[in-house]
Amino acid sequence: MKKYIPDLLALFRIFSAPVILYLLLLDGTDQGLMLVPAIIAFIAAWTDFFDGRLARKWDVSSKTGAFLDSIADKIFITFIFVGFTYIERISIWITVLLIVREFIITGLRGLAGNEGLMIPPSKLGKAKASLQFWAIGFVMMDFPITLLSFTLADFIVFLALVFSYISGYQYISGYLQQTK
Image (cartoon, rainbow, N blue to C red):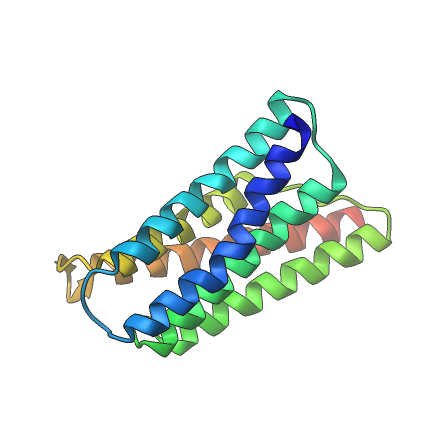
C-alpha cells in the first residue's frame, strides 16, 4: 500500500482541479472569500510537497509517479487559472502565458525523452510551482492589501509568472546544452 500513496496524492491533485473549478464557477463572483475551494486547493497544493518527498523517503519513486506529479501540477494550475479568468480575478493574458509555458516545457521534456535525454526538475521550477500555489491561495482569499496600486494577489501572480518563464528558459537552455 505504501508504494501507492505518492501516486494517490498526485491523483488527488488531478481530481481536485475540476472540483475547485466547479466551485469557482458556482460562486461566480469576482470578490469575496471562497473558503471551500481555498481549503481544497490548500490541501491539494500540499500533496505536491508530500508526494515526491514520500516517494524518495520510502524508495518507491517510479516513472509513472514522476509523470503523474508533473501532469497533476499542469492540470491543477490550468483548471484553476482558467476559472480565475472566467470569474475575472485574473487577466486572460496571464492565464494564457502560464498555460503556454507549461505546454512548451512539457513538449520539450517529451522531445528530450524521445532523444534519450533527461530534464530533471530544477530548483527554480520548484519555486515556480510553489509561487503558483501561493498565488492561487492569495487570489482566492482576496486580501485587500495593495502595493503601488497592485493587490498582494496581483503581485504574487506576477511573480509566479516571472518565475515560470525564468525556469522555462533554464529548462530550454539545459536541453540545448545537452543536444550540442
